[in-house]
Length: 295
Image (cartoon, rainbow, N blue to C red; front, side):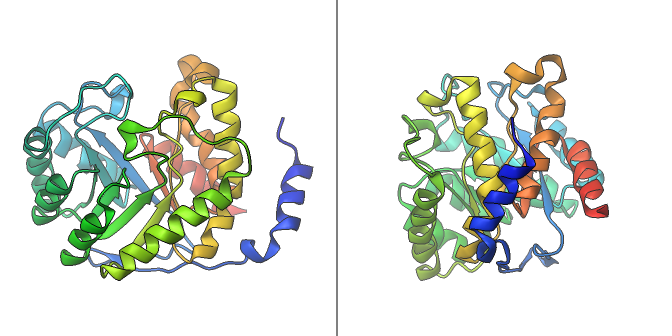
């Protein structure tokens, strides 16, 4: 059970980190004030393998409609992915991914939505940025210098995801032996240096809590890890850049109320000073964040 005393101890040990301010910037002409107001990213999945059924759109027309709904519900950015991150999901080659993604990007940009694209493939990244994508949600570490160079060339932003492996589809076991924050801080510091060397100035860092590591299949272990990282997120803000979190599901605990899981985790993420919330449940998450801001 999480207790108030644990939160007090965490804050006492890290008071300097808790006071840290992060860089604020504009994306596609829209300014973001992360230090005073968190932002929301809605999700569209173009893969039938994605298990969060409410987010799955199997045609470009359906995806564009959902994107417009997400924006109306409060999403400042819409994240689109063509390949599920589930271990059993089919892999798509570059051509298959771009054929799904390009019409959706173009349609959403035509109605003024800011678009993020989730991929770890350079060719897909180039095609999507050329089509108007504003953000690369980078779910891999391989060839990162090339990916950052593409982001810089198109004056886009990048979400750098923490991945213990070449990409999100090739992860093994997560190192749970110690406090994960120093490992993540070192990883992000290296990646930020590479990104800045390639000319990238708009950066988010994402601890990658939605990735399917083999030793995080036990629900209690996984949720404990997720809660721990959420509450310690503010320590990563010392790197100077805003933090993005993909809110998880904890189906084993929420069961038929699984659509309430992401808003629950949003509370923990907000306490940890998350700046960008990636969620399938935009109106519920927005209501949670607005309620917290009343205090």
